[in-house]
Length: 394
Length: 229
Ligand SMILES: Nc1ncnc2c1ncn2[C@@H]1O[C@H](COP(=O)(O)OP(=O)(O)OP(=O)(O)O)[C@@H](O)[C@H]1O
Ligand SMILES: [Mg+2]
Image 1: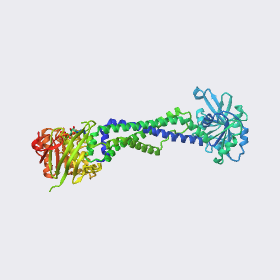
Image 2 (image 1 turned 60 degrees about the vertical axis):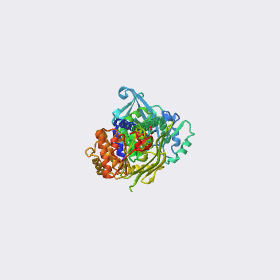
Image 3 (image 1 turned 45 degrees about the vertical axis):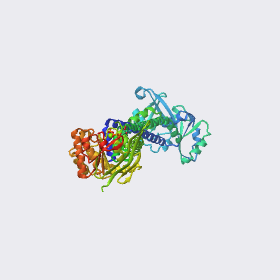
Image 4 (image 1 turned 135 degrees about the vertical axis):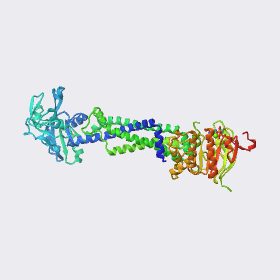
């Protein structure tokens, strides 16, 4: 006979009650794991999206920073236009490692999405764009034949959706322009996959935006120069400078309220779980008052009784933890789906990231929860006076 | 001269209720020697249970002195009382009070666990055989008859080889035949093993089997001839 087996056998005696309590703990653990998994996954995906932009700083026309941040990650750069003399002005700044101007235009295609209508994103770029994204590879074809040729390079998904191969033609609706597909990019897992790239000059011509840009992506030689660089651009009229750190902060702000909500739900779930475990164990302690008295008559000390009751709560929490972790792992895709439906901006990649360390930590947290929940009932039981306990309920 | 296991001097136990103070046991002087077999008798409410609980260290005494194996425990700390309950004194109760989730064998092993003694199955089975339950070792209390339950509880009391066995109306819930069996066991334990036993009972026939009979009334020991029984 060990304290553990006495505890276990007692739990087995009231199966339904025990199982219900375990389920309660499990739900709380599942919520906790999913939430932290989401936190880790979302941040990682977001960081990945931001890293894959390839630049530290985006210079855009003045506008709403939230909108700009979101559009930037969606592949645009804020659909406001600025003069390209800004580009010429900073081009030769010695702090700059790589710099790429871009002009984004969205074109409505009535036939898109099987007749339901959809926006297609076009981006005018120069070869410098590829320098920002050294991981870009052509699946087929290659770069434009000239700086103002009527040609396009399609992102992997754009090519799939439009079912185009190198050499095919694409029709730009609204402006009645036909472009020849010159290349198709490999999949990158970012928003670039959905964009149709054209030479910058061509874009300025066909969209009738001569000398205009929507953004300039800049990679600095030294990231420490960022603050000073921003400062220097501060006085240029009509533009704003968005650093990736800012974007990250802005997006995290956007999801911040959702996270706060989820956090409080998790807290409440844990609180309820603790209360319900405490309640269950307390009930079982009161029911067993006479048994506890007898154990004391048989030589159990207060510590012996405390240990048995504590074991019971820990056992419940361990089983609840295992159950909850399993639910969280199998349920993560459902959680992922719900999050994608609710959030204003969801990065590409897995949103709920459940790592072994997280599982281990949650499990530990559950045991600690058990210790907390069990303390009061165990204390009550251990402080019972043998005679009073034995005579109670007579 | 036999060893004095329990010595009570003017032992008094009061219960304090909001309205009154109840003197359940009043100034009792009592010596219990090694090998004694004492029956405590008396009307309901006379203080038998309170006396047993007091000398068994299940509760603290209010006034007077109590010596166990020569040691004064009148004002002893709870931890001292726990040690005494663990090693020297065992209880048998009227309604058996087995742990329902544990088998007969596990119930018997439990005091060894609390006493930090090696939990030898062999020893537990041996005491169960001793009370005639070698064939019920793995039964749960709910699968045992009343007489069998009481015999398990006696086995549970014996397993630590106590100096003193205290039984509070051990036959109160049993029929005549089972009661007789329980008393036969007590008698055998006392005569063959020299176990010291104190039993509180209403059953005068069984009480007369003991070596000594003590009558209490209103919390006091009274001379036998004045007994109302
Ligand atoms: N916890 C308590 N609080 C207050 N009074 C109590 C308590 N326990 C017992 N008493 C009182 O103390 C007296 C002695 O009670 P006790 O249980 O020792 O009697 P008893 O001889 O064992 O009776 P019975 O034969 O009915 O078991 C009784 O008057 C009883 O009412
Ligand atoms: Mg009584």
